[in-house]
Length: 86
Image (tube, rainbow, N blue to C red; front, side, top):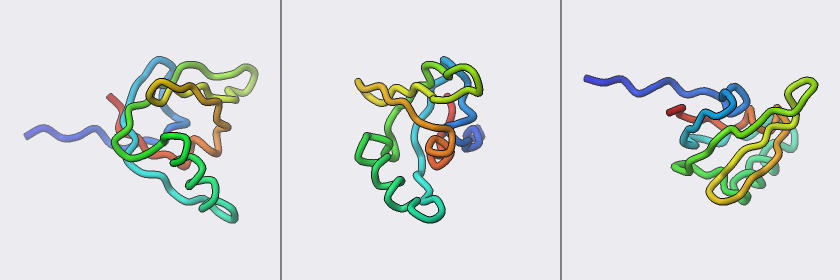
């Protein structure tokens, strides 16, 4: 029996690491709008993603590849996305 890797938040994915989107969590306040916007950009369950780069200093923004597109996300936005790392 093989165990699936645990889910992690997208903001904790290492540079160069890939994963699959599992869930988008609505945040607080306007979080539902933000979650919907992330899904419109392509962060949908089952989609493959890759962490390309972290900005300096402070590690923001995060450059994320989704499909054939690259997006810059703030850490709190990326924290809404649960992924299964590969």
